[in-house]
Image 1 (cartoon, rainbow, N blue to C red):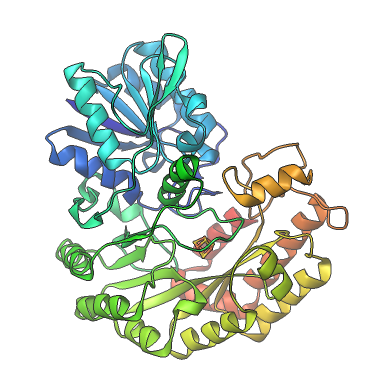
Image 2 (image 1 turned 90 degrees about the vertical axis):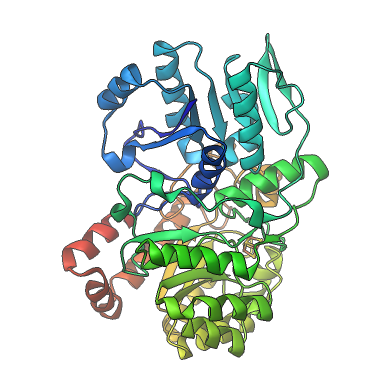
Length: 473
Ligand code: SF4
């Protein structure tokens, strides 16, 4: 049976980034979450193909011709909020050509709003973690057996949408095969400028995060997992971690396959000193450069030293704001001083401190707090900062707050590029104020001589830097 994972050409010209799931694409990132589900199916004997038409630069006409000639038995779409319209349009295109082919949607958007994807009796959504559910569904479709008992799927029965009961998150991540990276047809296109090496890939060592930040949109896989679990038991799913041995084995495999750079695609990589140091010691001789996200309060000298020795090149710290009241409001559960200490510690070990700052996540945000963030970034000589406008994503506590307090400009959530556009407005800080502020902040940071010089060196040319900045502004 042939199963094809599809990424269609975007209908509005903007390519959604599907791994983080909340922004448009700046550079191509391998979707290891999709490749993990693909690996499980492949291991069971299914013939898998991954057609990433955005990488292939297909236009709509080419995509339609592909659909006309293609002989797949099932199509799958990993859908995020920003890709929903494009993916639904692709479903319509498929239906114009093949009315009966099963189409499966998975990812955070179908996990949150399955009914919006299940448009006919041959369309299904897989909610939450996909691996086991996709396999059960594929087997049922292949053997034409009942799908009634398959947990975490939604489907249409006559005119009624059926949402089967929820599935518990996968307990032991070590049982999953490594992502099917060989399905990527052009592996050298994937890149992370913070690492600057190719071939580049991603590894996921844990799933989920135990903290409670009101705005949090974790990785698209964790978000799917959280949405499914929260609908079920009204709290976050437990964090699941792979064993250090299993992670080290994957890094060794990547080394043997020629990979030189890895992004650890966890919501938060540092879960305990012993585990982190064990992983670092196991991969340090491989010479692979890598980076990750970590909470400032999970770092200490021993951990950062081990990470530096293992060739960690950047740590993404979710600082969000340098104002304690704002951090408390957004339930970051961190002291503003801890963030400062972490930035200094990371830099001391030669690792780039990359921080995220979000404008407008709280009514305490003012032009003064925004200004203070920019001053702190300068004072601490942060290596890289990403300023965004807080966007209340469906499924988050921030979304409820925005609805109750009528913060949405258009009455509800809309997919927007958070590096440029605001979905919310306050009486003292309007949509336009937020958009101007984020533009000014990004402009100020990215156009400093220090940043330009460093990045021309890292990216290889002024043209590469210009291309990157063009996507931002
Ligand atoms: S610490 Fe990071 S990943 Fe965890 S809930 Fe907060 S924002 Fe999300």
